[in-house]
Image 1 (cartoon, rainbow, N blue to C red):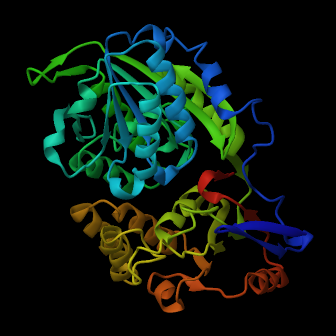
Image 2: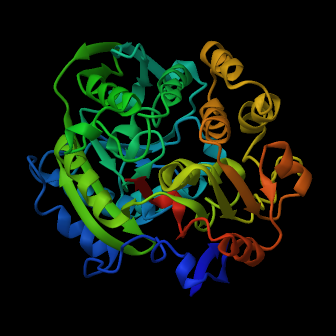
Length: 461
């Protein structure tokens, strides 16, 4: 059978013997999109919000905060911004503060296009507005609200806290730590300080629970026990108890109005959408993501997967997301995976980093730490990371445990130099078709083939 997988901006076609296949190609189940353009669908959703009045009915003469995701998860942000700003403008707000939930990501890289869209649509609507990308290291931007039960210090952007009406524009999918990317993540890590992000992300070391498919909002109670997600939920709920007075510089407990828009989408298509009370939207979104992007399979010995197109395919740092989303659930212990991704990076990234990580900081903390501890005992790594955890090390933790705990071998078809891949424990594979043929000839197991792995969740039975 011919199998077509995404390879960066292109496609690669491979032959897989029918008797070797464990089942059909796994890819997003998005054959039935909602009718209409994204803009039409989003605007129509505003007519029937859940447990909330229409957004335009509550914003008059108020300061409204609107938060959208950054460009690392680039999707329909432009349409979300244009539609939400138009709906807010129809209610005649006093001003609009527009936030880009960059979290610990670099705003200069991941907020550039979104800033341009905001300027365009806000100017057309003649809104009084300001734009606030999140700079997590700029401590003066944040106010401390207390700790969660997981001891995460909740430092939230004070300009967000100054808004009595707070609106989320989001696109949902599976998430390798939070279980599902949902509205909660707009607050931590999206609009929070470094200390909040780092403490929350250390919960990812609980790698059997802080995983794709588990979330505090999931309708199946057996899948709610995700400490990373439970912590994120608490952070958002804590933030909604407070209002910051910009003029007086005072924080006070106050009821704020919240409004959430979420959807399951791909490129220019929307498959599910809801808006209104963020809690109700979060409760429903997990089932919607499961419907279109979730798979439960019998585990196999072999697997071949592509993370999808850029940015997911640009660096090993991004490609790793699919290890958690697919390899961990689909492969037997001792199995072998072939990952198809160019890992060609962005041209402005220095050569020794390009294709491995997006920036020097993630190179140092994720990759250099992986290389250092790859051949040391697992117990030594676990002790070190518990005492010295920093952002990006959760990825190191996941890769080391996949190699050492699950005994998984990962082969890599990419543009990375062989020496670079080998340093991190990956096995270069120049010929994907040869790799498939050799394993089929062994007749000792089946293979799953997966496209757009960074968008899916594959759970083993």
